[in-house]
Image 1 (cartoon, rainbow, N blue to C red):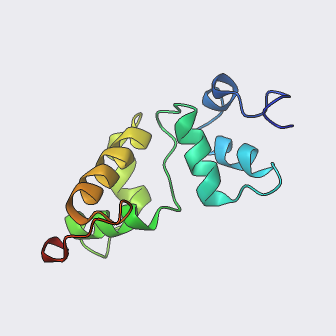
Image 2 (image 1 turned 90 degrees about the horizontal axis):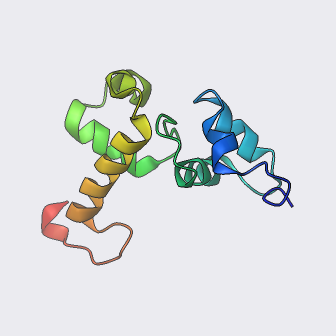
Length: 108
């Protein structure tokens, strides 16, 4: 029903402040923080920074060390934080194959 009444339209989600689309999507029963981030990314919101992607956090720790936060690191990525995060997650997947299941244990 949320899709039919326009609450999940890409244009509507992109028009919100970058922090707000996640909240709007989570108003749909059954969609939590991680799912909301996927929906917002699918809506092509360029600056919606994911906060619930554990693999992104691990990748950032590898690159920047464990003492930095995703929010702090990503400030310089504005207004393209969504796509910077996607790029970093893609690099990690190419190396680890965490999602595809084709693990190469020598590259972890």
